[in-house]
Amino acid sequence: MSPERRWVIALALLFFGVLAVFLGGGQVAMCLGPLGVTAVQCYAASGRVPEIGVGLPLLALCLAGVSLAIAPIPRRHWRVAAIAALLAGLEVAVLYVVLRPRTMEGSGSGGQWYVVPLPLDTAGVATAAIVGAALGAHLMARIVELRAARGSSRRQPARSRP
Image (cartoon, rainbow, N blue to C red; front, side, top):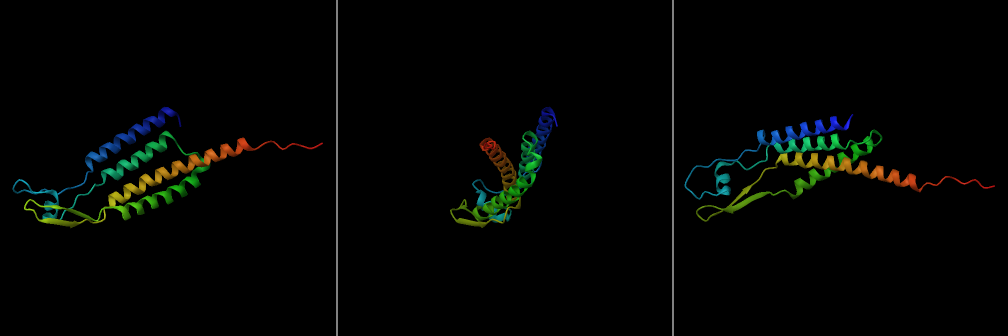
């Protein structure tokens, strides 16, 4: 594939990713009431916690496609890159689940303290997995290429003894 065609594909993917962020944003609660209603008070009253929506995972997927379009992984490294992508995506998703916030805390307009439990944000997990997989695949492919290049430069032709 020509470099110009790769850039056209990359720009199209980037456009669709940005469009997905605008059209697939997360939902938040709308609380009508007196001035001074805090966000945590609104979430406690409505039961709807903030979410990132499907736009961010789609943007991450498009950016992974952009990186593959601009710098494709050589065919000889696909197997290693796929294993690295699987492991890195799984590792980053598990890391996101472990380190994510579990509660949202804050004071209300009357001074009372609210603690709202947050459910697992599946779109956040998907975003983390996609980004981890793309980075893992690219890094492993580049490492394999560098090791192969370094190994071939170290090899010396065998000398024959008279």
